[in-house]
Image 1 (cartoon, rainbow, N blue to C red):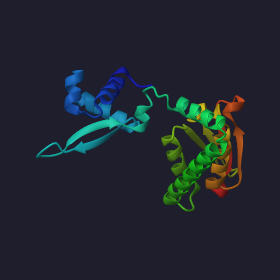
Image 2: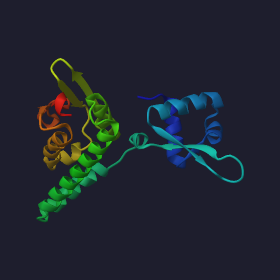
Image 3: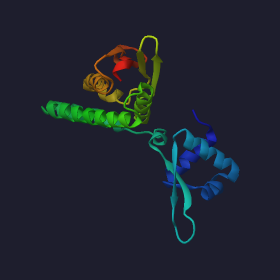
Image 4: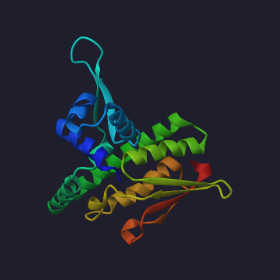
Length: 211
């Protein structure tokens, strides 16, 4: 939940595409100091990104635009559209096309995750898990990790499912997700919570030594 003033700034960026500090002052009547503080907090929380745009001689001007997380404040029918597309393809006897798409998508995700984890560390589970968490956060899963050093286990909890509309049409993403974690975290992965079964989150127990 963000404040009304910060949401007003996000709305201004949404309407303009990009927003400079000067235009924000004109539109809101807030002081430069106050706006800088709001923008700093919005950037820290991952809702906006900054860029410097050259519009002539002199130093480039600072402007803000919405990040992918910032865009989530605005309605989107993409999940429902994808659900309808899957239903349409299946009704036309193209179930294999749907399955091929999702399998390729999850293979690409696994490749990306393994690359990020290897870049973070090849041997430190905590650093590797941190890299995986950052990726899952960017995808909207709202992940939480708890590392139990005594039992050598890691508990992953995904508090949000970005594919909830798709899962209403096919459970293939759920099957592939479990395979995804086994691919990037080792074979010792067990699902312990499942949103479609009524749990509040999807959760997994992962062997720390296999990460």
